Picture (cartoon, one colour):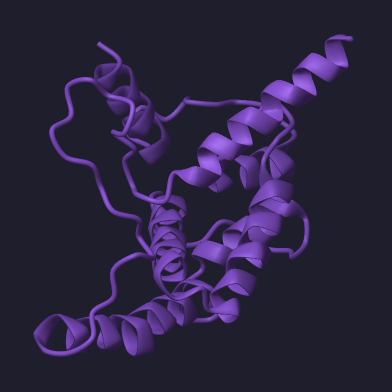
Length: 177
């Protein structure tokens, strides 16, 4: 019986999530004066913004993806592969490389929301699978530490007060006030 109730709740939550097409759903807020339109409900058809969107779709997002997934130009995605055990090596690049890759993945997701381009969907599926393998069972994910932990066998976290991880943790704790 509990399993049936859980499944019904999950289906209802999924329907709510799927019905929300905009970035922020204010349809249930008694305080909202306006509601957002769905991300795929509006298209730039001509003029300045259509040209800017085309540049973003055809050049910027593909170049960002090529750069951040390259094993020779930028190592941010390779760090995820090393942390996942798919590749070998050491952590390379600045400590905030994970965050840069997440921002790139977010750009791909936003472009996919507007275009439904299957190529972008494939990029995201691949990245999500690798990130999922890199993530520890307790939810922890920071490639710099995970790679070091695998190398050294030590389970230290947040030990470097100047690391990007500690910075993010501090920012998250400040925003919860």
